Length: 485
Image 1 (cartoon, rainbow, N blue to C red):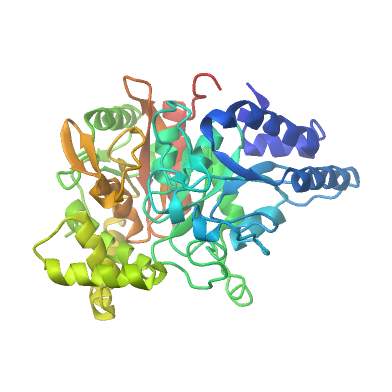
Image 2: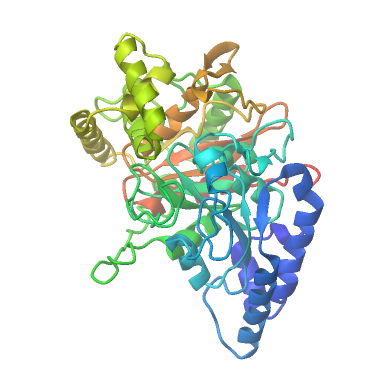
């Protein structure tokens, strides 16, 4: 196995025991970037001088018997939306082309405090606002499994870099599947954390320097193994810097260790957002393997009063509300005029976006109350169920489609033309109610494209979804290196 495909935990052990220097490890990853990145365009900006200097410092510290932390000397990349001191952070927006970070995002700082060496940043869509990764500054990122297809978004560069062996660990973010979709599309692992347990301070969007936390949006790791996801979660989770004076975060351990102790529900398809037949077949195959292993899987149980269509409606209204603060006044006023003229009978995605972005605060409060009632239903549901299996997204990786406006795109599923924005439906199921969700690869389509399963756990019980994901990984074999890498 190429050194670059070993787990982060194993690489850290190699540095710790002197088997390989941090500098040599960095150069190995940089060599892979030189070979593969031109075709993928996953890593879009680097600071190699600073990375090499820090790697040498890591080796000197180890020679003195010092340890910077559990990831001492580990080279890695992070999503371009995170502020990294001395590097550009644009979120793919031409308006931020000249924005160079003067401070580190809180999550980035936690990784640096654990000893990592950040050498580059990975591509995203404009303002991390699409499930494809392309922008006017850095161009388009391709999927290692098929260059004509998207790696997903908005952490698409992150997942592509992992699959291609250009990093062993990545820092992503997720408001609408932005960790989970790329993980599924590139055949890697990703964890959407419970809302609020990892600081998003220093993530763009919001605007540079903003202090507010965006509703639904979370930070989280991507990796090639579930063990590495859990390692990263242990380093990243914690209160905001100013809260750490008096608050501590202690996530509960996994509910169970043994696979057969887990109580599992399966929600693999739904008329509210029909799932590609090959994806359903792969997920049903996973359920069959779990049952053969002795796991009781309930494919009928659902949280009381919740269905995918109504959940998506609530999610989409709250999601679009998060966009309103960043809209230029002219765009906001245009949406206001369109929404008033169209009326409620227009239920198209463009009009739903407009109505959500310009909604009154009272409307948001009423929708938020719906969300709170949904959270209560999920909490009751998880008293009898430990995890829910669902699609990460309703389709395998699809060809690049950068037509605008995005909300008017179409995407064929099972031969039926569907709204493109359905790509958010299965991600929103966990996102709107702040639940943790882990994605692991579980199979490939007939044409060889990866498919992941979404494992949804109870709020703040991130280690339960991760523990079950580890069992799924063992059953299915986990990450597979894409051909040619």
